[in-house]
Amino acid sequence: MTHYEAALNRLNEALHKIKAFDYSTSMLFWDASTGAPKSGADARSQAIGVLSGFQYQLLINDQMAEDLSVLLENYSELDEMNQVLVSDTKKDYDKLTKIPMEEFQKYNMLISKSAMVWEDAKGKSDFEMFKPYLTEVVDYLLKFADYRGFDGHPYNLYIGDFEDGMTVDQLDVFFAELKARIVPLLSKIAAKNKQIETSFLFEHYPVNLQDELSRDVLKMIGFDLERGQLKESVHPFTMGVDIDDVRLTTHYYENDFSSAFFSTAHEGGHAIYEQNIDKKLQGTPLATGTSNGIHESQSRIYENNFCRSESFLEFLFPILKEKFEIQLEGVSSQMFYEAINRVEPSLIRVEADELTYSLHIMLRYEIELALISRQISVDELPDVWNEKVKAYLGIVPPDDARGVLQDVHWSEGLFGYFPTYALGSAYAAQLAHYMGREIDIEACLADGDFKPLTKWLNEKVHQYGSLKKPNELIEMITGERLNSKYYCDYLELKYSKLYGLN
Image 1 (spheres, rainbow, N blue to C red):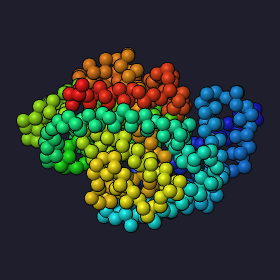
Image 2: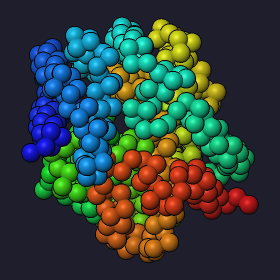
Image 3: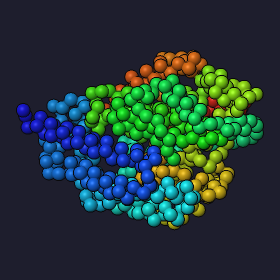
Image 4: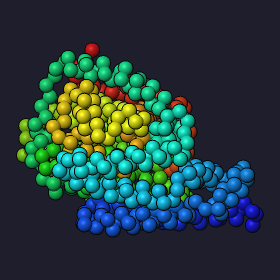
């Protein structure tokens, strides 16, 4: 065995152990989010702190430093999978070696407890409860940025953690391009003043029937419930702990049909991605989505491009009429389609329509940027939030639960995450455009047949996991890098037709 082969064996052994610790901490998080007693929060937080310490030690040690050095010297001798593993591990190593282990552990304990406090604070609509935890999270992120070092803006570190290669400069251009076409479209829709009846969406929809529908739709779009699980949580999320163990949650409201339905379709897209990664990557850090933006493209393409489409909703409507006969009495499939796709400014991001959704993301991006730049403090957040919601959407949150406390992300330190939602919608439209050159998407949706669509995504996107990086993957599939033109074209075509615009 050569020197570099021995180093590679040690690297893979360490990465498999790190993956096992990831599995354990994920199970603690899953348990905490789906019904574990709140009284156990401190114990879970302590356990996560200990486990994260072991993970840190497996990655940060003299042997790992030596092995990475040897492997980088022999990089050309490695196959593609091991080249990516070595490159990614070196990036993680460089990221963490500059952060003292004790602080790394304390931070992981903080975000575990912070997420629990956020849940209580949201339930009581009390930002003051959450404020000291968020203040500490932001302080840690700023401290970590100084430890790690950065080019340009410190926020570049955090967007780069979720979308490799993305920067503040690029995001500023990206959002400016979306504003230039979406805002005028919104103005035209407002001027049209078309009234769309939606009251039937807010009748009483029994939770048990919504749950049945969620499971039926998951099967329809291609999620294997034999290798996964659906439960309920305060905030819907997906957890791919292994290719053969993918879990997702939704949240049911008895008087809001569309919330859980589209949350399930959204999380189902994430979950299908995780289930269909090539088995050769199983057990490695590459057995997950390549970036948040690409991952979000999979949730958005199922939720919006497919499940909100006129063709699919026309197919689904007779099934819904049978299940919810009283609630949908006197409603036609066209009425249902228009109600589902109405444009109406809303307070809650996860329930926003496709057009105003990007405004919710821009709002959060601007706030994150201001916090990391120290232009605003956590104390100011509720006021800043409300001012931006009023400026962008023309409405004001009546309380913190429907305002600054509505998302879990900041409690977990996930700064840089929100912009990837908008990037995901753009990737989704670009992928759908190129899929449409090979498959009659509308005909498939009209028949409720997702198999050709999911198979195309399995082959083009899912199988590669993190083996291909975002730019490489999207260019390989479409022949070009991210192009927001397809997203804007899609929105203009769909909503001009729905609202009868010239």
